[in-house]
Length: 125
Length: 408
Image (cartoon, rainbow over all chains, first blue to last red; front, side):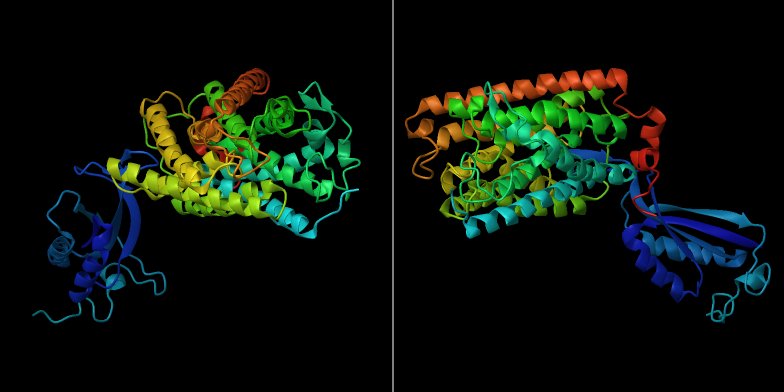
């Protein structure tokens, strides 16, 4: 089976997370610039005079589709790279994926996700 | 016949170009401060004045402002279509340049003044009503007061009011009109409830920078000659902008961090305040005028916006109305004949009467602009409607009024 990881992280952690994922062989991902907030609430900005509150903060969302058995390792990698320990570090959602089709070749399912040198073709250890 | 001085004429032509540039500069200053969905609309509110008022000024505006005096209140129709305004100098206004150069220079002031008001009603004004308003305002408010202050025989000019480059004519009129218009049109939906984040502060920084530069033509050009007084005005102008920018930075820093939008706003407020004084006060007085203008406008914005009293959206009243008023009064304090023998001494140079004259002139102009704008806006609201619909406001004026997007 395939899963989709949707990780919402701090903007400034994107490079750390990307590097860490490359290390473990995650090849494909989509990155979105989004705005939102969780428990962190918002931030205070300086205006023309005094300050004002903004409750939607810029965040980055990574979408990664991968095989079931790679999910835990990937989630752990993201978490370690994205964490600062402060509120606002982000959140990760995992969804089941019904099917995957690679447009160029028409391959479906796991086949459509495989790349040379990716997490599935590497020898463990 | 007076002889034309080519140096004076060249400087006035350059100054006209500099002042014209201030209108698109203002467009960017304002355009950067509104929400993304209204950037084009806001840019256009200023830009369109270059088209609209250029024609108005040519056809009859210049004549109403600078034509033969009628009772000190309005100019006659002798310069309709700029008839008789040509290469010959008009010694009543500028003896060493073609009369047409003076008319063109003055045109740029007539253009930017209604553009300044637009900051009061951005993000909700109906464009076609705005066009009618601007034409009426230029005709009924700007042209008469311009005549009072600068026209030969104008009532405030005869009174002895000093306004070197338009502190009263431009900034008090724009600021107090903005106040009246904002009261009539009402707040933007969500005002005080949600933060309205500026779409592009770099635009505002760019606009303010170009305003600063353009102001050398605005104030320097108002010497109407390439002489020592023009240089003096350039230096006082620069000094006031610098002082106000620095003071605003510290005020903002004290409240949180040194805001960039705050620093550039401060510089503009300093420029506003020194406008009536630029050719009458010393550079050190300009430093005080600029430095004290910043807290006046800063705390006025905090008071008005902080208490959600009025959605005068881009603070035209606080920056131009109060900045201009302070400048007009400060001219009555700091003016000295040592700087400009054609001026007067102010209160600090032993002439308290000048302060009173400045007070009367500023108050009369402010009251006239406020009342007339209030009436014009009320009438237009009842007939054409000042606002777009709530849905159009939510979508944004770029799409709803122009069917265009600022960013694809």
